[in-house]
Image (cartoon, rainbow, N blue to C red; front, side):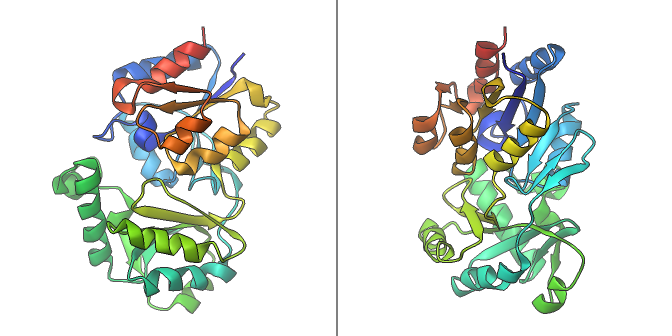
Length: 284
């Protein structure tokens, strides 16, 4: 019997316009009404997730920063695995040498070493192309609370590292995907970190143990839930650890081929209510 559902957001639960379909919402509430725990697993921080949850009146736990944090429905951090500060400058050097923009997610805001407005505009341009969004979505629409809109410039990296904040992840992006591949090759040489891509034009770097599947393993153990009582859903390479650790894994038709190969079952695409299809197939 399934006791817990864990779903990725972008490309899995969310439609292209960053909304949740009524069919998927109905299925989630159907499961919750039957005592099943619903959890979102995302690369976002809680602030970036909360806007979506509030908009659709959805109350649930969450895996944040691709596994750097686990939060309860109120946003309280229950478990965490933060980026090793001793490796921070090594990672930034890779992106700087490749002239690639990046955003630093922390427990006290979002940072970058470049001019915030330049990084913001580059990120928005990327999203307009990839997600078919409009610039207005970020200026006064549903995307106005995204990290790119609230970046703070780091003037001195050494001083930044002395502060009491914790680093959740570093996310770099470049529409030239060959540069992202070069960055991954260099990141592979650094012990103590993990790096994953939600899309082929980005890479997200965390502590080596900050992975969705690993933190989920810890949490379900604490909840006394067996692995076979969990179903997971995801579409990207940052979901691989969940698919490796949990048998009942579901990939939407639009998922990365590697994810679809690992999946227990492939369901309809994120645009065609694949999450609802998966839920109804497992929860009667």
